Amino acid sequence: MTDNLTTINSVHVFNEQQTAVTKDHITQQLSEKSGTVYVFYSDPSVYIANKLSNGVDAQTACNDWLARIDDILNIQRKNRRRIRLICIQNALAQSVSLEEQTGIAASALAGFNAQPSDLVLMAGHQIVLQNPGIISRLDRLEALTLQLEEQPYQVKVDAESALAEAVKADAKAKDAEAEAKAAHEKLKEIEEENELLLLQLQQVQEELETTFISKQQLSKGHEGELKQKDEKAQELERQQSELKSELEQLNAQNKQLTTQVESLKKEAADAKAVVPEQPEKLKEVEEENELLLLQLQQVQEELENYFIKYQDAQKQCAEQQHSITQLKKSTGTPNDNDIALVADKSDAPQTIQQPKRSLFYRIKRRLGLVKKNKSNGLAKQHRDLIAQSIYFDANWYLQTYPDIAKEKIDPAEHYLRFGGFEGRNPSDSFNSEFYLQANPDVAAEGTNPLLHYELHGKDEARMPKPY
Image (cartoon, rainbow, N blue to C red; front, side, top):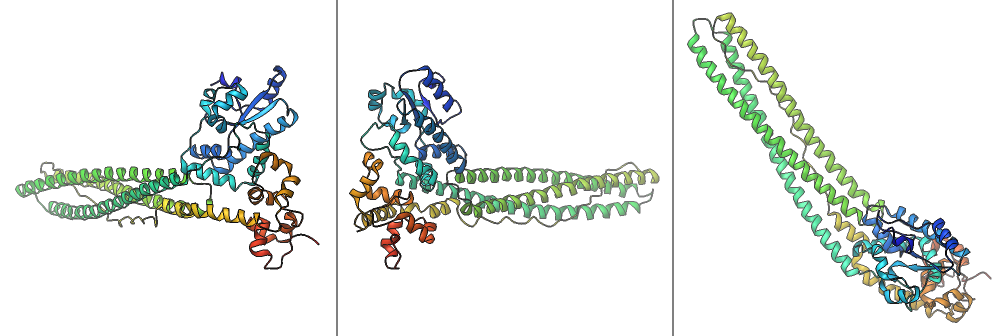
């Protein structure tokens, strides 16, 4: 890959083994070579989607794309005749045209072929459309980019595949939720078993205490009875050993449940990584995860308390055995193994609340993926409404803004998506900048000025331009 970078200059890279070209590197090539220097850049939707897949937040990815694009635009402005810009994804799609126009084989770009999933690509595309900084750079990039096909390159987002991915992820989240519910039920069973163990320990304690009191009352002449009680004490010790083994098994089960909950937490974090950065919408999910972890921690602390109390019981048992030994020495009887066990019964751990809803259900609902086709139809209606408006003159628009005419872009669609927000006018009869300044509510909504005027403004007696 290092050898390729001597000829493939790309300001955007997709893995740690690649090195992004800098303006200093390009300046050095301009001084060392006499021919054209080709510089590649990535489509913002693909670049940001790739960053999201690698755990980078959306704002950082956008800033990184803009910073590298601004560097190359600045140096290209000073060397317009020698630097040509090429979109990586367009070059990969039009390999024949690329080699004919530049002599560069598409195989040299194989390491830059990023293929994010349809769902993440849709997320990256939505982030680009909502970033005015990136949108403002795209027009200039299209004008300066070497065209390998008749139409400017546009990233294709497969909404149906993205929706299928979301449905699949939602089903996986539901399975994880079912597993969490089963784990909760298992934990509840463990709590009940703990309570039963505590009750049994208490009964053993009472029996041992009764035995110990009886032994204190024995005299030297009751050795036979003392021997019988010693055997019973040994039986109680055996029961204690069995209870200890059961407690260790419960601790092992708790550890297994903890591992399952950590796995569920990781799956929820992975689901969040494919969604555009929207802290307001994900806050509820994060709070539910924190509640689940907090309550699991409480259960673990309760089990630790049980174990500490069990150790205290062992210590007291040893003390009691020492007392029995001393008693036998004082009464002249053989040493015994009687134990007094102290076990305090603690409150049962609190149960874990279940998450209210599936994470991927909320993601699908908030992204509005099922309304994608409807939104496309609405955008076409808006374009047609502008094209039919008496305030839109397509010929005037192309003559006034020759950069648009040069790129062969549909003037009505360009004005709807970009022109109205860039301060361009649809005709001499309508002033976009004046309309947005005079109507700050329209600017706050992010609605195209002429579109708002046709839908609402003229019925509300709003002015299309200053008089």
